[in-house]
Length: 167
Image (cartoon, rainbow, N blue to C red; front, side, top):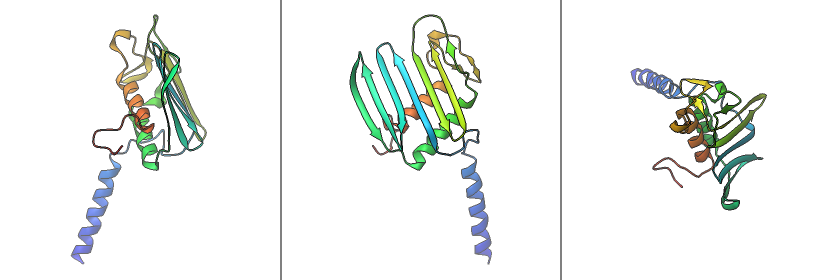
């Protein structure tokens, strides 16, 4: 009897520890109905688009397609992507971040059931800690929230796996 009680306590504690690693809503682990992400860096365009159940990845440099892939993300891949979106607080991002001058342009267009998030920028990114505001410093490069989102998108597209992950 003591063993059963100890086992139940261990299971309950393990579940709460695992749950603490999950970033809460607003993007719940649901199926995306639309996803489009693009980044343009002076002639290099990388895009990811949802087509049915697959992600279509393209990399174009100076008008020539140099890489493409069609990826079937697993349920865990989607879960990790959504968790990264929550860590980056994409749900707080403004619709437009623009700083005068030339620089990286980017767009994200996400839809999940009845929720939609559209954001983009030219030469600017969401500010860390105040994601609804512009970073306002083009020399700083992509902000941490943008980098988190971009890393997650590349991982989802199978183009940038974390160290030790199977290819």
